[in-house]
Image (cartoon, rainbow over all chains, first blue to last red; front, side):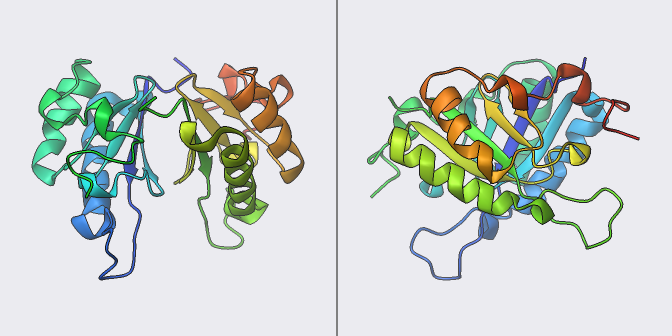
Length: 115
Length: 115
């Protein structure tokens, strides 16, 4: 299996303190990414890669993660969600519905979280 | 069109000078990403997003880019390739074959570029 079965990108963008948009970095995204990477590696070895990414432009949606190739977007992810993302989505192929950002929140000028 | 039509990740990982693996950052990946982002935005607006990514683990393959959802991997990308990637792949949907990394080079312990 030469390609990655799944490729996970965790936004770790950092903005200056007080920036009105906030940033994922201030919400512990680097630690969440490290935990996700470790848990994924333990369960799935090299078939899944968990990368950091620059700003995914979902600043109103808490710590944001996108999983390819299926393009599943998660928002407001916390450390408490890591295990479920790995076991349900990465291992069993079942996205964690309660964390998914709806289509109407992605790449749009206005959504319930954007003011 | 709420989701991104394509999501491009450019490795901008930086290692200390002299590291045996080298890194994409030392090969101008940040400038390549900026050029790709600007050219893509000009032609396609917000339908395509061009992000930085942490190490994509293709250190032997020059500046590395992966395009999702189709999971097309490019290696040894230079500034001279930016226009073609945008026009051929992102606009017309035709990957730039001469830049593609073959399956046998991705996520493998050994390939012609790995020593």
